Image (cartoon, rainbow, N blue to C red; front, side, top):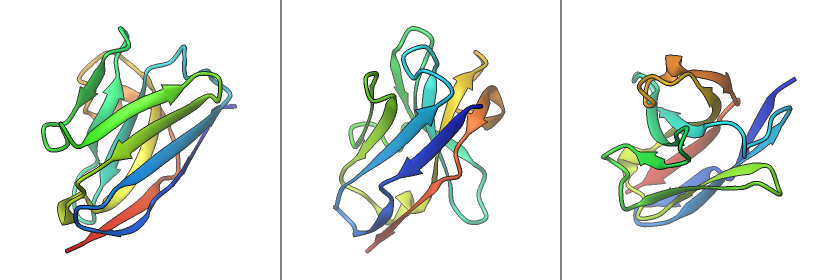
Length: 123
């Protein structure tokens, strides 16, 4: 059974940093495409960052240069380092695994999902 558990969310002021973690079980992060999505109230879920089948990191334009996705194969954990946070980054952040190969930023292209961790950025 696949399980993805996010942690590391919280409340920060604009300009601050957070690191999100996603502990995986039932699959190996070294063998699966992994990613991060977010969803703000009243908005659609959107891709933030992800590793494709060539293990290349992809980022949404809105977070390029500020967010970094990484993974620790030994810990079987995916990370999202977020810096220079803005109020518009406020959302529930979700870990995902199992990219189907289409547009990576579409949530319907991913199979497994965590429950999410809340990030709130105040101005």
